[in-house]
Image (cartoon, rainbow, N blue to C red):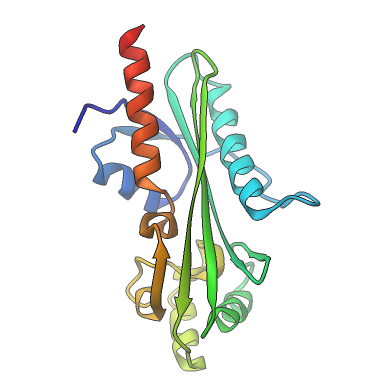
Amino acid sequence: MIHLPSVILASSSPRRRQLLAQIGVRFTVISPDTDETQLPDESPQQMVQRLAQLKARAVASQQTHGLVLGADTTVVLNNVVLGKPTAPADAHRMLQSLSGNTHTVLTGWAIIDAATGAEAVGCGNANVTFRTLDDDEIAAYVATGSPMDKAGSYGIQDDLGAVFIQRIDGDYYTVVGLPLAQVYCALRDMAHEEFEE
């Protein structure tokens, strides 16, 4: 595996920090404050890519050099975007809606070279099928507090969230919060470009 450049991660997500560390990327974290509201007539894929760019650009604008990585994950059920829950009752409602159904997870990402303004943007996706959950399981999971900072109110890597999932079609790491193969290839390509200069 080639040497990957270090990055500035424009995200407060502990899952993204773990994933970057997993593939040997050195990074620092600067978390921007961005409005994550979906725009009118904006598709979920357009939304996650726009938000990833927005986060990366917000941080890149404060830097003179370096690569900035932004990302945004959302859950889509029957064309409805399920973001992060606003309260435990909201998390419970979301998990009830996911129970026994298949939903789509989208993670948009954007890498910006702060020195040149060059951008790479992409989106990972996966379809996730939940088994049928009972209310006690949902209540126990919500009581841990874990769903509260996650799109769709669950984490595939969580102790309890993991046992809700019956099947995944697509990229597992997209569901965790960062499509690693896509991001690795983009960082590798940007490292080559820097070397060529």
